Image 1 (tube, rainbow, N blue to C red):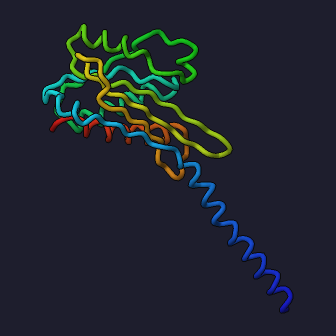
Image 2 (image 1 turned 180 degrees about the vertical axis):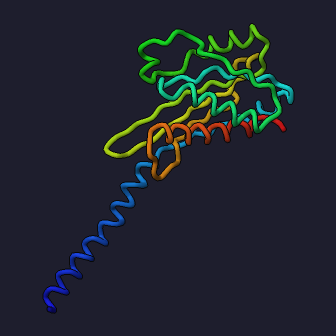
Image 3 (image 1 turned 30 degrees about the vertical axis):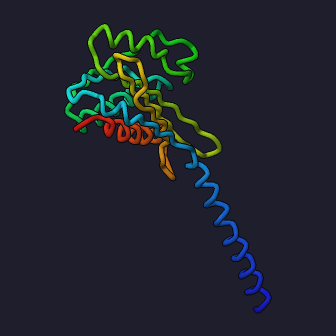
Amino acid sequence: MTYKTTVNFEASIKIFRLIPLLTLFLLQACANPSIVNVRDDMVSEIPSDAVIFIPRFEGEPNFVEESTDYFVSIIEASIDNQIVQGSVLREESTDIASGGNLAPVEIALSFSRERGYDVLIMGKVTSHKTMGSLNGFSTVRIYDVETGDRIANFHRPSGLLVAHSEHQSVMAAVKRTAGDAYKVFPR
């Protein structure tokens, strides 16, 4: 009996040694960097009645529509400024459809200037799924339309320890960048 108990005890110890490694593996999935860059001197120059233009986000086609809608709904609920939600700024090429970079800011600034908007917010969403690990990402840039200067930019991973889908991860990341973005505007 003693031998069997000792073997079971040693097996239990081996399993307990694996727990920290498994925990580390799970945490690595969430260890993506965030970028928060706000130019405070420019934030103070945003008019309290600024009209904000938000074109449709770019990135993975499965997520861009609802990501834009979700981002806009959070911003609208958080600030009093007029929000203008736009559609796509350019024809989608293969690069964009596969998650390429944001549209050139000159296109968005020109469009915004023609319509008299004060602030431009551009966004992009992406995700990845590897070996059972999911994560979503949201990148948002805020520009002064008149000068073309970048006021702020944010890049956030989902921040979820466990996610059930790429969609859930992307939406969690969008929620984080929307929370960053609305804090830029005067209340």
